[in-house]
Image (cartoon, rainbow, N blue to C red; front, side, top):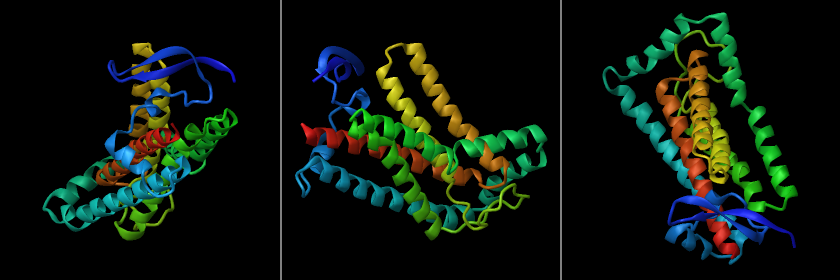
Length: 266
C-alpha cells in the first residue's frame, strides 16, 4: 500500500499538520478529518452499525432539518415580515433600482453570474470532483460536494413547493415561475459548491495569503451571484438571504456528516 505525506488536522493549533507515511486511502482534506463531536458519535450509533448507514442516516436527518428550517423561515418572511409596514417596499426598492439602471454590460455580467450558479455548471463541477475523488478511492470526498448540493437542491425545492412569493414587480430577464421568488436557489448552490471547494482547498494549504485569497474568492462569487439574480429581477434581498441560509446550512451539515462517517470508519 502506497503512502505519502498527508495533512492531518491538529486540534491543539487549529491548523493542518503534515505527517509522512500516512495511509494514502485516508481522506486527504483535514477539515473533513476532525472529530465529529458528541452529536456525530451519536449518529454513528444509529441502526446499521456501518459507515454507509451512518451516511444514509446523516443525509436523511440533515435534509429534514434544513428543509424544515427553510420552510419555517419562508413562512415567517411571507406571513409575518412582509406584513410589517415598510418591509415590502424596502425589499422591493433595491431590485427596482437595479432594474432602472440596467446596461448592456451589466446585463451580460448578470448572465455570467447566473450561469456560474446554474443547473449546468455546478453539476459539472461537482461531478468532476466526485469522479476524480472516486478514481482515487476517496469515497467520503467523492460524496461531500455531491450530497451537499443534493441536500441544498432538495431543501430549495421543498421550500418553493410550500412557500409561494411573487418575484419582484420589475421587467424580468428570465422566464421562470412567477410565484417561486423565495428562496434564491442560485445563491444557495453557489455557497455550497464554491464555499465547499474553498473549504477543502484552504484546509490543505498552509500559506496564509493563499488561504485568504481562496476565501475571498469563495465569498465574492455568491455575492456576485446574488447581485446577478436581483439585477435580473428574479429575487428580492430577503429571498437571497433565505438562499444564503440554505447554502450555509447544507455545507455545514455535510461537513458534519462526512466527519461522522470518518469516525464510523475507524
